[in-house]
Image (cartoon, rainbow, N blue to C red; front, side, top):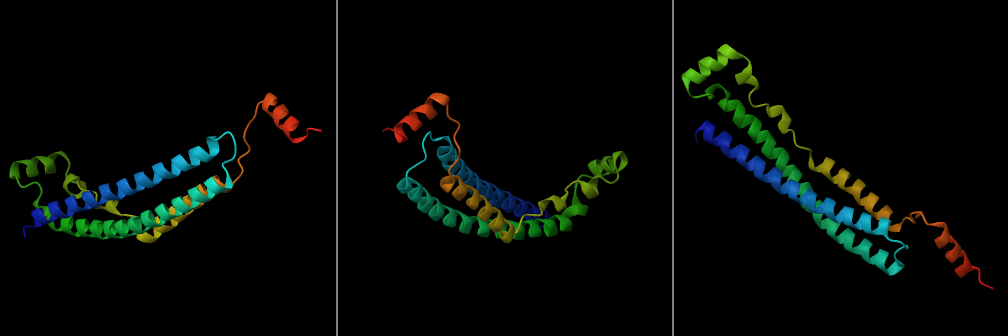
Length: 167
């Protein structure tokens, strides 16, 4: 395979895995934000049954999502390493046109060496994604179970007080 085609294919694969990984993170973050938003914004504390259901549902979703994300991040790190090697093999061949190569060297001699900054392709490892996901899971579980002190109007406080302390 031509080194240029190999570099292009490696980069396309990296981008497709990165897009897929971002989509899984997006779904996870939307689900987590919805659960946190619901439990914090509710006027009354959700019932024990509802909180238990949210916890079980979220944990099942989170475990499945975590498994996929750890695999995708590991694949993304391997794809990034492949792109670095493939681009390194093709650096001397860009640009293919002698005219553009000469103009590039005249205007900025270091441009061809830094045109593709492969150092930015360092993908987080599966382990990093795992611990970040777990920490976000804990935040969601705390939001479900923690009794958030809700701001109440003085009239609501009087009604609650009257309801609990009736003779």
